[in-house]
Image 1 (cartoon, one colour):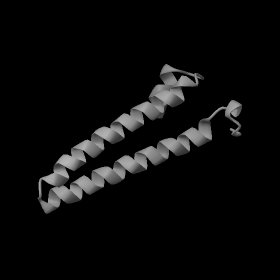
Image 2 (tube, rainbow, N blue to C red):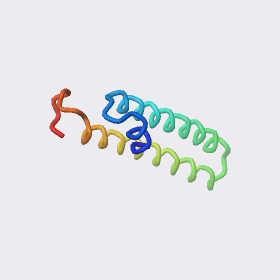
Image 3 (tube, rainbow, N blue to C red):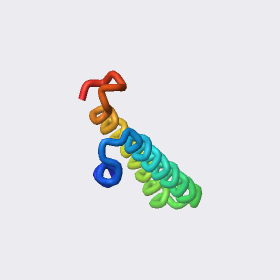
Length: 79
């Protein structure tokens, strides 16, 4: 996601907000799908649902790391 946003908005601080919005939306949709799978009752589907939730959380954490590394110095974080 980050290379696509960086190519569309080079050097624009809005790219960070757009990246977080995209990752957050993706995580919410993934978790909603996982809830539906978890409610189905099958053990295999419940395991798959837990995997989806784990992947969504890891994706948000990687976005936070990317944000911390690439944030501009105006936000008091050294590049």
